[in-house]
Amino acid sequence: MMFSSDDAALLNEIDEDLRAAIEPTCGMFSKIIASICTRIPILGRAEKRLRIARLTEAGAWTDAAMALLKIEMPGWQIRRLCYENDEWLCSLSCQPGLPLALDECAEATHKVLPLAILRALVEARRMARVSVGFTSTITQLPFVPVANFLCCDNFS
Image (cartoon, rainbow, N blue to C red; front, side):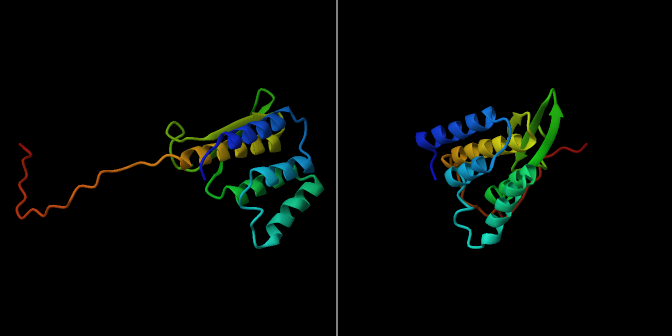
């Protein structure tokens, strides 16, 4: 799936809605699922969808945001959650084993924890869609068998 200007506009619109929100709502989760989620609408097993619906109806917003992240972006996981200066920072990572300086994290902040997680999910979706368009090419060199090896190191 290539990253188009329509996708960018939709992601920006949802991120702005989340940034401006004071608290999470069922409608907000429904809009995110309907507009940017690709895995949830095609899930054959309805129990995962029903779990998110039950969590949002019960007001368990953080659990619902984490369940949505787990279902929609299975390769991503929460690397860091911290609360500083009256805001939550959520960092999502594809490779949490890497040192932080080498990892490309999707980060977002908000005063409300589930909204910070949802904003980070939107950022991860943006990063995932952008990276689909790039491919790397590695030149393949032919294998040439060598009969005799010669070591030129001087170990004296």
